[in-house]
Image (cartoon, rainbow, N blue to C red; front, side, top):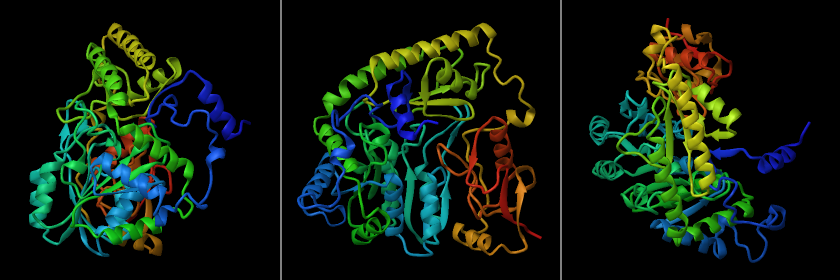
Length: 479
């Protein structure tokens, strides 16, 4: 049996091409010729301390703040997750209400649970044609804040995993009217603001706290991210306290060295982005020529994400995913109910992009020859599934209260299969990973729509995570 290192080395030398994160695509190497062991140190003299930065790490973080136009920036070596946790915990007190976009990553819900917060949800829109969630409505935010004046902070995700962007500027204005901070999970938008092809970064649109995953869309090592702080609506000392608590006390100098190299590259972004944008725009032009497959697009969208819809092609997303991987040796980022997501980044090459276009055109041609059967073979229930949609569900308990009940294992707590759990209050999360946005959150009353979606996803071969048992979820029964 191969060791992990042996398998990684073999894969790195293979012809598999990645349309997934990280953004360097195993090609744009900012540490060429340097062994990670050679630069793997601890906090020795002359190399500063991330938790008490006064020298070279302080300068590196200040450089990142300048590049992103933030007042204060912190290196995150535990990924965006630690930034999201610190931002939320540092902006709220235990038991506070918090406005949460329901399509946020699971780390947002974990922060809500850790601080015993009461979430007030706003839902994204939904485009039935592309089966994609659209942005968070500013009017919905205003209405939620009007109805819940005790909300102490707001958090949204923009862009989404699929690249859909909300109107952060107007949402920030609405949130600030109530004197509270806006936290933006912009993990998938670390490249925003560096070229007119891409949306502006939330850092410059009024957000108080912004989290970026450098590794997702830029040439940086996996696990590297940034937390940006702006304005006086936030308690910076408290946020820094949580960063010190939640980040490892032994931060990797390999990761931090890579982050600084990436940031330095962004000081002159044209050299990095101009050829990439030209290649990306040409690739999207060619993909719009598909007939049965379709390049899914909505108005406010990050063009770096290639969302290929199978809705009219007579094939499943699993079939497309497998053919790209097994026949063409192209690794997509993920598949959803009706589409496959392919991530591009500055590390992409003309050869890789051309290989993708050729593959999709060949698959498209085969689908055309078969006539594109659409949803043929699906039962009535499956035809009604809106695969990217977040079902509206009544919140009975806070996530923290639900966990307390679950841990006590009282008589009314039991595990039920998906088709028997409708109307019961969930005590576990249920989500697809990726993207890691919960369909069911502890404390929610499980709707028929949510139960149908979970069964449909499982029947389509998706892995549902967050539950202790496969195909079942723990609930607290009512009566």
